[in-house]
Length: 205
Image (cartoon, rainbow, N blue to C red; front, top):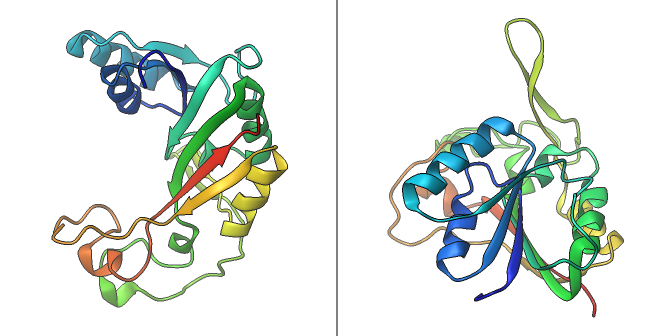
């Protein structure tokens, strides 16, 4: 990783970019949220790790063509945009030929089931093929959160349609001995269905 310029999409408070900085990379942490980037700046100061922060829309990256070596996204950016292929095309534009983009998203199998760690709730309550976005509003009716559901096939087509080669599609298994419950995930649920989908995308070069 030493000396490689790495773009992180949807960085939030930028923990991944700080990890990359420790590994010797030169990360650029991008997010549309000014609040998250303010928190990232605080953590930069607290840790003494200088990570470049950039507020921008992932669908219109303010970076030159062929200007980064690698790109990544850990549950950020892609699930929250209506046109994932357009964002992937932007990533392909700024990556150097032969570059790689690795993104993790919530596994599409999450969507048809209730958000519950109870194994008794492992039942299908809606269609896997229902692509209606999940929307939250505040008490004044304003939209405060939108997440888009895509099937595995949708992700594959978006990656290939943006010009990438899909090198791998990883579905991490629950780690044996891990006993924590986090959100809707528990050891019982994690042993039966995948929680994460990892897209490993290579740009021909």
